[in-house]
Length: 306
Image (cartoon, rainbow, N blue to C red; front, side, top):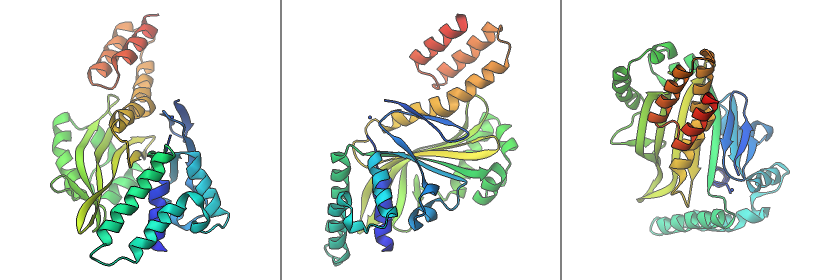
């Protein structure tokens, strides 16, 4: 049953379809393109969700109505094999459970293929998760990093580059590989610890999650972003199991519009409304740093000039 719960979590964590919506999660308004809905895990008294969210102050997923439907059916007391959309996956899981060492790898690949086919059929390949981890001090203490948020904010770019190595060391990242469990880990494509234009530290990681059984098997693409607001550490991640070619660009746009750009505009508004030169300079810095696209830069510039 534990393995079944793991695969149910995998299934409901990899779902989505397509018009941008804004989701209010308290400290942020998440602007996410696609036909998504917001799911607050605390509203479902299900053991595997409670376990997954136990260490967070807030725990949301931005996914599809099909995911919510599955959760509602489980909550109502239905067994997993009574839920139509899960039946082909459960069938492959049963074959994997009864397999021996010699053919288990084949059945595992077959199971993953069925999951991908099911999600693709329902146009449900991507899922986003938003968490509030707790106060900055609590999170930094728990991570083993001997530093405060104020110290991070006061670091120079040179200090930041040096500290990136320390962060990797604390996370036990070796050869661009981060181990989640003995059987599962992330092969990292990109890892960055830096500061946004408004001087707020952030952590970014992009890679592929692999499951190791006889051979290394790719499960999904994973992107993670964490930063701080109002003395709270928050994070947004994206998981994609198939058709992931545009995931990085989509995620970057969400981060810029939901977190970085909005915070930067607030910083700008604190300056004199008549100080056009200073506002244009800040806007130009955002454009040059890659936070704004050319189209976003031109629109914002026109607003200032008008």
